[in-house]
Image (cartoon, rainbow, N blue to C red; front, top):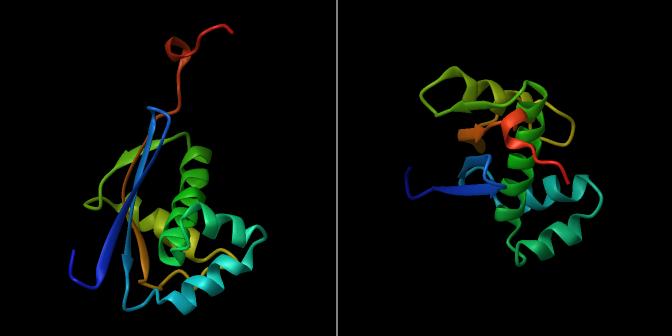
Length: 123
């Protein structure tokens, strides 16, 4: 991590953790605002992140990545492996994102375990 990068860690439930790195020289507030405003409810997302548009887009990126990871049955990886680069490219090439080769956002690591039989309890 350099002085132009910032890392964000997000968690949900005891089974989900993802870390995203932002290159602040590429993901400027203007570009982040454009990405955030591509989808509806952009003001609500921005409000939930205390008006920090960079944090908003990092969280949105993480949420999109987790959908991809869930579709693949969950995963555990760090930036050392190919999975981080794969999921980063998959999100960035989707509509509303800058493109698959853009380097302003990347997934650093993820730990997303799909709960199994022993994890479920009758309600």
